[in-house]
Every structure is written in structure tokens, then in C-alpha cells.
Amino acid sequence: MALEEMQFWFTERQTRGYRIQWRLKAILHQEKTKFQELAIVDTYDFGRALLLDGVIQVTEKDHFIYNEMISHIPMSTHPQPEYVLIIGGGDGGALKEILKYPSVKRVDMVEIDERVIANCQKYLPNISDQMTHPKANIIIDDGLSFIKNKKDAYDVIIVDSSDPVGPAIQLFERPFYESVLQALKEDGVMVCQSESPFFYEDILGDVTKTLKHLFPIVRTYLAVVPTYPSGLWSFTLASKKWDPLQKDISILPEPDTKYYTRNIYHSVFALPRMVDDIVSS
Ligand code: SPD
Image (cartoon, rainbow, N blue to C red):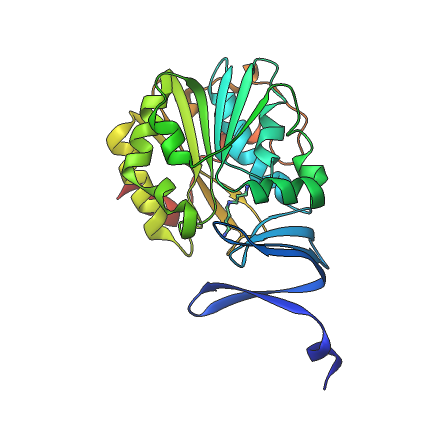
């Protein structure tokens, strides 16, 4: 047997015809939780990674790109974000970014699977280390049932979900977005991850259409996340009052980040034609 074949590879299925392979140093932990298959693996090129149902969610090497982009764009769009809700986000990466804003008084983070939190705290401490911050309020609950009872409660809501399969399906559907609308204050801003425009244009298109029915301002932006399929990743921001395209970037804060800067704040909304076609149709 050739040496290459004896090595230890994990295959992540993306579509019926496309898979990504990761060479692993070790599987550090594996369990079936109440909601999903969870694993923490140690990869050769991306460090440790969290997998849910066989899909990479976050890696030590590039987590900062996704977490900064899902957090700083909406946080900088709102002039004074004080009360923030994260739905999902059990690795704690988005929470860590949000806590960089001195205006924040409390961050509620609602994660359905307590095992995600426990394992990220144990195996990915560099990402999850702010979960014990005094302003962080960690709630183990289903995102949809939690948000249904909220009204005019949040300045910013971040939907940091896994792909729309398994427990995250409902976070891509209209009843959930209606509850988000109701839970936001009168000038609130929400953002969700809306998948790869390259592989999942139907998801990005559907999310955009649904949010345009509910919010006066809907903007798509992009980032390059190497560990997600195609690398090109979309986020959809919906706002009741503040339009990121009208923002004066000279007044934006410049938080301590590795990817986000206030100079890219506007540029990420400039869409390639193939993406613009998806969200304009
Ligand atoms: N294909 C994987 C996309 C995962 C996006 N969300 C990850 C959430 C990590 N907090």
C-alpha cells in the first residue's frame, strides 16, 4: 500500500459530486449529542476543528475571518449596540468579537446544543475563552422558541448557524425571521450567514427574498473563508433603519482584528455580478 493511502484522511461531503479531504493528526473527541454528531479533530493545515454532522464549522487557523465578519459588520452598522443576541455560535467566536465593543451591556447567546459549548471550551479555548465574561449570558435553548417571546429587546441579532440541515433548518425559514424582526428594537440590525453563493445560490436567493419582504434594508456581503466550500461565503444583513451603504466609515471604531478593518466595511458590499444576480432577482 502506498504511504499516501496509509495516512489518515477525513472526507467532508459537500455536494453529490464534490468532497473535501482533510489529513488528520488525530480525532480528539467524538460523540453523538441529543442533536447531532460532534467531533473535534486535529488537522495538519488548519489546527483543531469542530465538526457537526461531518461538516467543518470552525478551525483554529481561519475562524477569525468568519467570526469577525459575522460580528463587526452589523456591530459597526448600529451606532450604539448595547443588547446583542447570538443565535447559535456555540464555539464562542462571534461572542468574543462582540465583546470588543465598549457600548455592549449584555450579550445573550442561545445555543441549542450544550455539548458544542462544553467541547469548544475544552478543545478550542482560544476561540471560546470569553464565554465566562460577565457580560455574556449563555442560554441553552432552541433559538426559535427563545426568540418567539422577545419584543423590542435587541439592537443587534446575529444568526451564527450551521448549514440548513439538522437542527439549523428552522433558522433559514420565514417564521424565524419574523420573530427576529419582532425581537429587534425599532432601529435594530440583524445578520445571518447565508452560505456559499457558488454552491448554494438557492439558499442565498431564498434568504434574501424572505428578508426583503420583512425589512426595508437588506444587504449582502462576502468574505473569503478558506475552510468553507468554495471559500466564497455570503452574509445577509437586514436592518430597520441603518443602511451600511450610507455609513460614514471615518467614524467607525477600529477594533483589534485580523481580517476586518473599517476600510473593508464598504468594500465587502461590492458584489461580483454572479452574486448580485442571485440577490437582485
Ligand atoms: N459549511 C459550513 C458552514 C458553517 C457556517 N457556520 C459556522 C458556525 C460556526 N460558529
